[in-house]
Amino acid sequence: MFKRLLLLNGISVICVILFHAAGWGFVAMFSWAHQYMPAAATDFDQLGSIAYYVLQTIEQLVVFAVPSFLFVSGFFVAFATGRTHSNMAWATIWARIKKMAIPYLIWSGALIFGLLLQGTIYSPDKYLKMLLTGQANPAYYYVPLLIQYYLLSPLIIPLAKKHWLPLLIVTGIIQIAVQLTYYPAILGFDQPMVQTLSTLIPKWLFLSRLFWFTLGVVVGFHLTELKLWLERVKWVWLTLAVVLLPLGVLEWEFYLHISGQQWMDPRETLLDSVYTLAVILSFLAFDQIASIPFSKQIADLGSKSYGIYLIHSPVMTFAARGIYHFAPAILGYQIIFQPIMIILGLGVPVIFMEIVNRSPARRFYQYLFG
Image 1: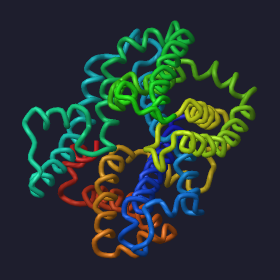
Image 2: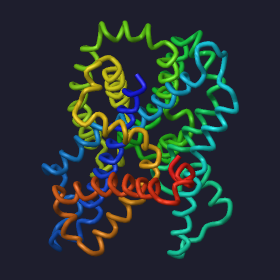
Image 3: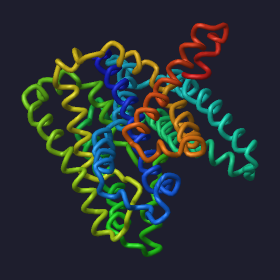
Image 4: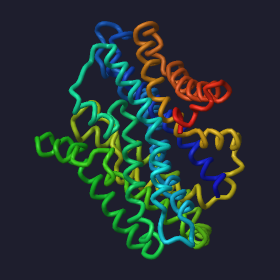
């Protein structure tokens, strides 16, 4: 099971890179169109194009990535606790938080220093807020979020052991309630109260994705019983995942249409959550998943996923901006732009981590990459 979870982590980190590459694709398509489109063109001329729907499909396909990270983290919390212990030792919790926090602070500090070099200066309390909520980079919210879950582990673990079904029901209801706050904004209501509601639970706050971490803890403690159930219904979950993929694309297009807006930042909907659950449970249910092509290499990426996660987003940001300034024609060809972003987003972190690991700086490896 541990090899399979490393494989899931590896697939998830690749999916995160695909998601962010697609996001930059939409930036190139809509916000940077003036760099390569004729002067008479508008920013949204490519809405509804083949490239547009390919990017939408990619975003929908990989929406399970961050919930899968949280699920795997929850599972390893259960493993670290063990069946004979009543709870996880605080020393273990602090060790795990320290292993995450040091690389996070180093890379966040580097990005903040980069802003200073560009002349962007904030107040001390703003810098503190950036570090506490992951605002140094849009992808970094994940780290404070996971740290909160580790701190909540002593409350979650006893419930996951003895009262796992009520725990999943309650955290599932919380998940639904959080996602329901997105819908007024998705549906195009623009009253001030609606905008406040849609940002009431930020992504870095523990309530936003509590269910996925809790699910991982529960599965970690009750894997044997759950495997028997999953074996009976595995084709149901796989079929559901396959069916919900195109439905998720159509759902977002429907919301975009009725909202009256030309573009909206992606939000995880209730349908996305069902799709994510179907993907994770299918991954657990089918033993054949461990023999997919390049599974060993992908699992190796899974063992390096935290370092890749921290580095990939800044790399992709610099790459996209570099293309914008020095080769803007590429922005108009997603078939070229996307592979560049994906290769750099994955390749640069992996190569950099390997260089450090093989150099005298190896002793700093854990401080840089976890």
